[in-house]
Length: 470
Image (spheres, one colour):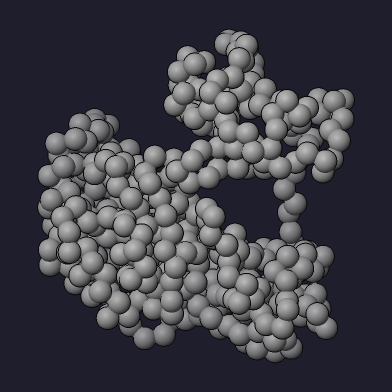
């Protein structure tokens, strides 16, 4: 299929992306589009309909999330197999969207993305906010440095050198509104002609971002030490996206030998880079923090990325990346004109938050809080009778349960849901055509950051009931 004849009606209450989404969905439900049929590319359809590409992408993303279409890496979008599963009632199909699908809310949610917002230092943040706005600082309301305010970048450099062993200068740091924005900016800097390799399983958000930015994306299998460098070479990739200090979702810490192998791979050919995502290295409960891979890089091959979303709050929307000099030169040539996406006021508040010691104290408090919850969950799990082992502990804000003896991930999740407890399966982190190896058995992720010790005990007791005599 190369084009769709859709009679769009601009100016109505229904957004254009929703009109495109409704048209395709109804054609699929009515059988006018058959399973396996290829949809037009977003580029082709936006030209044909004379709308922006983002409008078409929003429509496709909604169809993808609801299961009407499937995305195949490097091939495009295809109609999913739904024929014969259910006969759609045209009257039922006319109901308002809000009445169709509602996400169930669980009493206990072991979300691996949780953050404890009750520990947020509201008083300190309010005081710093007042201080920043007390004087008439007209300059704060002008456009600032595209890379972010120099004072904040300098504070980030000092923190990274002390806490993570990162070697950088303030002019190498770029501050942006979230990691997704920085990944988009990075592809604008280096171009989308690269083949990007991600660990398998991996952080799906990053995979989808690179895929939607029209990079060639693949996954590389892991062993107990992280991404296999041998298989990385076989993938013919020139960019490796890794999380060496605490891989998500497996929680693997990459040992020094594998790190050196990875740096050697990057040094073997010009144009190869390693993107190091250091998303939650602040939270380690046994031993010292693992130094960043960037600190071992002497040839400018590592692009380092970090965020304050996990350590402070997601709504802060401030992340940063450290560019090697060769990439920094490309940034200035191609993207130096792009204005900063973070308010100068917020940058100044965060700068003072770091410089005056509040950030360090907040990290110490949060680390102790998460360790207590981590230890509580571990203690509860060890009392549960079952054929499983625990991994990924002692760091981050989640751990894994690997079940043996024919346990089904789907059934484990369903039984937990029956007790009003939400848990997460590892299979959802395998992307593309890659599937979770059957030999790994069922693996469940349990996050604990946003649950108190009492609620963890209550939820663990319910899991024991749900999984007993499985």
